[in-house]
Figure 1 (cartoon, rainbow, N blue to C red):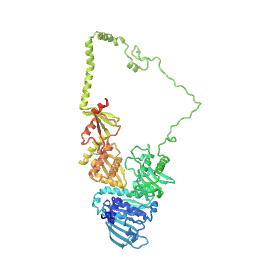
Figure 2 (figure 1 turned 30 degrees about the vertical axis):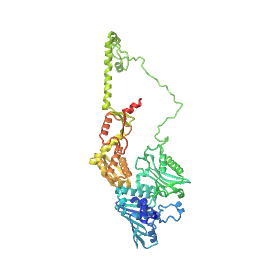
Figure 3 (figure 1 turned 120 degrees about the vertical axis):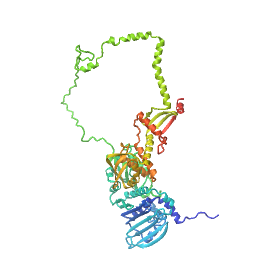
Figure 4 (figure 1 turned 180 degrees about the vertical axis):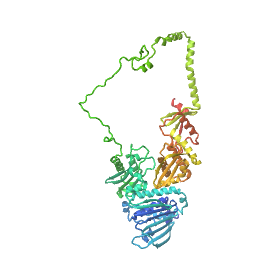
Length: 626
């Protein structure tokens, strides 16, 4: 039997590696920028066209490469960071596997120009699909200049599944921000379709955060600085009053590398327990320094997950550091007795004589006594006139004896007839009402400010009022979007909205759907927007927070199809506008909500699949009483 195991060709192996490392244009930018930082570059420029689908260019002023190094850099597992296995446990550089350039060259057309400081001329290499097409000596500036064209040109299936330009650009900006935040000493710039999005000069960490997310964040941050034998933590956390449900900026950086770590995230959020509402998030930028031998950065292809040796101890240190900062900067609510607005309390002096309060009353006052002249015997004339009862007792109760005598003479038959006449009608009306309610309920009951109870033919129906209203509003907003007939309510004073560049791209991509809903948002430039009108029926909501939530939801969901974006916006707006739990409803309001719910095509479930109503059948109720 012949052998069936064989080595893969380099071109196939490179494409397999590219599937792990290069997922989208943002992955290419991440790898190239990290390599530039490892080359000690102080100025890095990133230029993209069509969100990186057409071209990606990364220019740096780093060390550059020699002719031999430039050629070897595109080979698999070719790296300048590792010489032996022990180096894996002392890594402080960004890239070290030697797969990035080989993976990029396997799925794109790459042109590299590079030159070292000691050389007068540089090297130009052109590669497409892992095949070297050209290599020559050229004149170029010091550093490296990578030009990536037609990403996934030889893998049509991968290129087909790339998202819309707005979504891919949002991912590029997210990766760019992560790198820029951890390297404030490097100057960065980013251009999209020849339009400048970022221009970040070298500065401090706090100033870099302000440059990326806006100066408004400066008043919201508290400093964190803890140094222990195990780790060192520095950075910033946000004040509790800045918590929000979506869109919080949450970043962990370990030894200059961005990291996702749900376990450490819980340590931060536990420190804010009882300081922020349940379900809301807080922003933080925490920079952790730890010995490289105590972590493993090689457990994930994109190196965004890191394994720590002492995770439980680090969890406690992070939680304690955040709590210390909250207490140090008085972020925890306290009672302050040294305020200037305290009332003046007079000092006790024994020389002051205290007089017992005296009670003054008119001993002659009698509200039941009238004077002979028709006036009251005291100053309370009006009260005595209004309150004095009649003293003609015989006339008042004169009929009691006659009525008693008539009752004694009445026959037993008449007495029974009177009793039947008195009680039979209410019993009959009650039975009729119960019978009517079984067939068609006109009365509803609200339970715990959350559920609506109504009687139906099959039993008792329980309706979640918040979810029912979401279902009704969602269908209404979707109909408005499809007809583009959203009714706008103009604002007397426009609200100002400030967004970072990564969210500006998302807002611009959903602006048509916002207009169809009834919003009027004007771009003022520099990430500033004016909200001139909002949809009718949401006047009580904060329009800035509402649009923030829509942008963040669209960013998280990554919807690139028009219908998906419309669904996301309609659902977000419906969830924000729906009646809340605990809101007391009148019977008319409950009837209107129930009628509107059953007019929907899918009344049983919300648009995101949650149960709206449940029917407790009559048979089930009867079993409870057996």
